[in-house]
Figure (tube, rainbow, N blue to C red):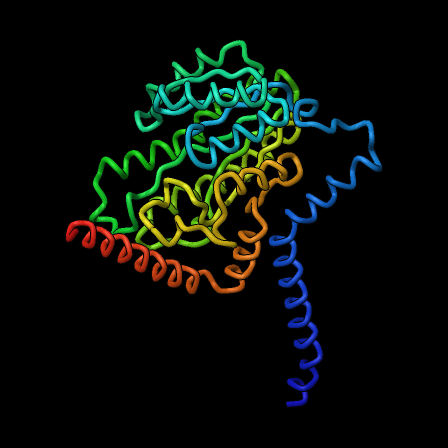
Length: 327
C-alpha cells in the first residue's frame, strides 16, 4: 500500500506531462497556419531583400484546373489581379474562352486555355503536357474536383459517378503535380496548391468516396511538401468547408450562403492571401473556427455528426425534388 502512495506523485506528474504535451500538439496543429501567416507578414520588416510579390517569388505563369466555375474561376481572377498570366484548364471550351476573355479584359494579363476532361483518366495528360510546353509555370492550383450529385449511400451512387470522382479528385492532383515538378525544379522555385476539403477531417458517411479522395489530397500534399522543400518548391494544402459553388447546389440551405458559408469570390480572395504564407490552411477565417471546434471531438464522434449532417442534406434534396415534381 505504501508503494502505491509513493507512486502517486510520479503518476500525477506523468499525467500532467501527457496533458501539457497533448495540449501543445493540439494548439500547434490548429494554429500553425495563423502563426505562419503572421510570420510572413512580419518577414519583410526583418528581411526586406526577400521577394514581395507572387510574380517575384514564383514567376509569371499560373495554371488552374477546374477554372471556369466556383473557387477555380475566382482563384484565376485573384492571381491575374496580382499580375500573373494564367492558364485555365477545364472541360468546356465555350466557358474557357469566356473566362479568358473576361480576365484579359479586366486585368490586362496573358491567358491560355486548355480543354480537358479529367474524368477520362490517363488519356488527357499527354494533351495537357503538350499545351504547357514552353510555359514556365510557377504556380499550379489543383482545384478541379467532383462530388456526389447529392449525399447518398454508396450502393446508390452510379458507377460512372464513382469513377469520375476517383479520376478527377485523385488522378488529376497526382498527375498534374507529377507533370509540373520537373520544370519547377529546373526553375528552382514554384508552389503547388492542392484543394482538399473539410470533409477529409473524418470518415464521412453518405459522402464516403468523396471524403476519402479529399483525405488522399491532404496526405499526398503533406508528403510531397517534404519531398520538394529542398528544391525551393512549396506545397500548400487548402481545406475549405462549405462554399457557395455549383458543387453544393443540391442544397438550397448551403447555396443561400452565410457567415460560415462564403461566396466563391470571398473565399478565393482570402485563400490567395495565404499563398506562400502557410503550408496548410482552411483558407477562410470562419472555416478555421469551424475546423478548430470540430477537432475538439474524437474522430468517431465527428464521423457520426458528419453522417447525420449528410443525411439531413440528402433529405433536403429529396424533399426539394418531390416539391418540384408536384408543381
